[in-house]
Image (cartoon, rainbow, N blue to C red; front, side):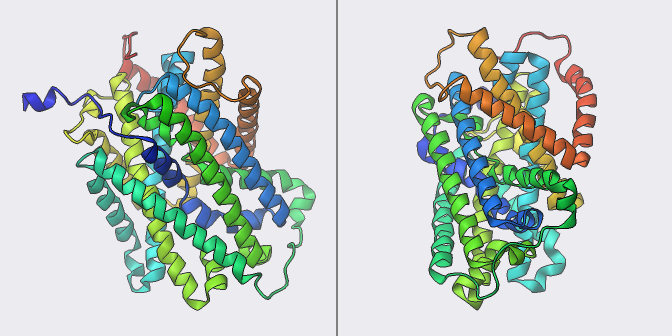
Length: 446
């Protein structure tokens, strides 16, 4: 037993660029793109504005990926953005952002399992009364897949991500080949609320949904310590992954808007499935529902891996209990994995998709903003740090990304006051947690 424990605080360097691309695409493309087109169409009754929003956020993600690539290659450590924030702003800022990042990513398996349960019931309606049990079953299966070691999780990620992209391309091609639905197309009448001034709120609510759909593009940062050649693989994984996701999202939305008018999309909780029904006939909805279940498997697998790496990093820096750094012989921080499993299990029982999705997006934008600010601070504070990769067009691109992030935060604060209150409450109690775990110590893992 002692021999086993002597190696329990080290992750294995076994990952490469194939996994990097797989985890970016796999952890990003999932339930958001399947569910949000209908909600966005209900908020913004104009196809051109909808497409502009998806393209604009995609460009923002590309700038963000470039900034994160510099930070991650500079500090290739498990846990992601909180490492950079801690170095730039100090231990408390690192602590609170690390926990925000953990909550954001630990929430994700819960809402992906909820959506998997919803889709499963569509295929097998006789199990409608067991939807929560189906969701919990998916969570348990993918905890068990990742428990033995990082290689089993990595293999699952690469296979499911590749097949998911192929299947979405089938949907896109099918929609453009079939042509528009034979009903009146065009824009919806503009709701009175928009005329009276709520258009800004509607726009920011839409951007919040789109941002949540893009969430996952920074997934490479959580596995940097396990990469065989981070200086080479991480920038490629970020940029190629972000570009792939952006192009695919724009094409998916274009395909859905091509075959169905905005008014139909606005009434659809599962617009991708309805578009498949138009493109492939009556069997298309059932087929694409099954495809959606499979594609969600990929994103669930990624989010079973990610939050345990954040807890591992937090534990190593003494921001959490030391047991979170225990790693099994296969390279999985299994104690952290079990904590994440229990957290998601409870959320599935007590929460809904919409509540979880909005809160996670809000927290993500806070951590991302601090990460951009960290890049600016560290360029000034520690100019001689080795930087194997440097962000595009710095400082203009990074300042632009930071200002956009601040604007999005302000918009979300106006449009989603419930999530804002939760976050404010977490900030108020965070200092107690900081003192509890950190205590009087001043030195941390570098």
